[in-house]
Length: 371
Image 1 (cartoon, rainbow, N blue to C red):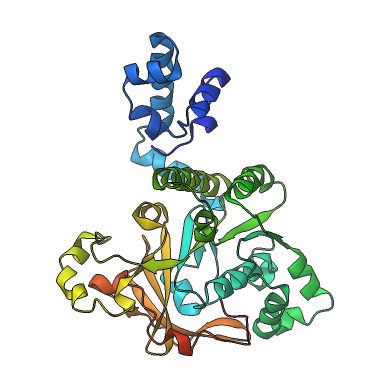
Image 2 (image 1 turned 90 degrees about the horizontal axis):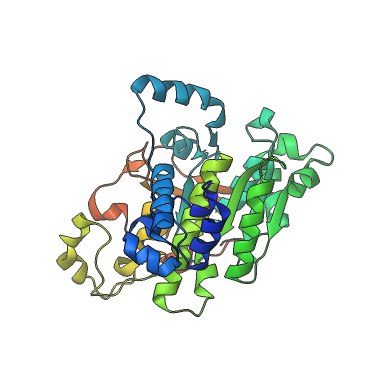
């Protein structure tokens, strides 16, 4: 609740504009400052500061609820919960039905491993008729790196769901339900997602894909603190959007090399730092998710796609409903396909490690289609 946006509270417009003008966007940012600091920064009277802080504190604090109230709330919202099937049997079983509604799901991995392939298959599933296991809705696909291919989506449909896609006009109808946006800058992306929030419910949008968030931020030539602030704002907005719209939001994240002196992401990895140093010359042991630890904490589901010994692996690295599991997969004309529906349970550092060993042997599929 600390990341709740001040602009979405029912604060008087005058205060909302003042906070926004001073780049105080979330409740956490406002409540982290003293009243005197806020009075000086906002240039308002102390009584106004006290009133605004009291309002923000109340809006950001979750109400005290009894167990009965929680149960009644859950039952009232039951129709809004659900999952988007990936049509990967083992992965769907691990995630209790697929990609969950109302939260952020992240796909992270090296270039060419299959992140965009995964996203295109999800887009197909969301637009698919409900009678055949889809969500029968529209998809907004933010294609930052111009990797989306309508031809590839139709190819996946024809080979994965031939009984439906061979019906007259069905392929064109499914492809027409996917709206592709290609923002050229972070500012244009920000404008797009703000407009999207008001149109999702009206237009029966059932999935939002951002491929990739890393590419958007990497194009901004701004100092570290400003980039962290930008990322923080987008994390808060996307989490709020997922909760508000009750749709799955899927975001891809790229990888980068980890510096030798960089702090490990998790405490148990730090204990094995010497073990990592023994392999300091291998590329695999130094790959980490590009957007950093704050982003990692913001996502509810993290799926890592990696290459190991000439094969591809998809790992459930973070999930509140599944143990860490690894599934071998390959990419076919019908999209991503698991080689086994029985996941291998992971332990220790291998849960969050990202490998690319032998990746150059497997990245090409039908020319330029494997992303």
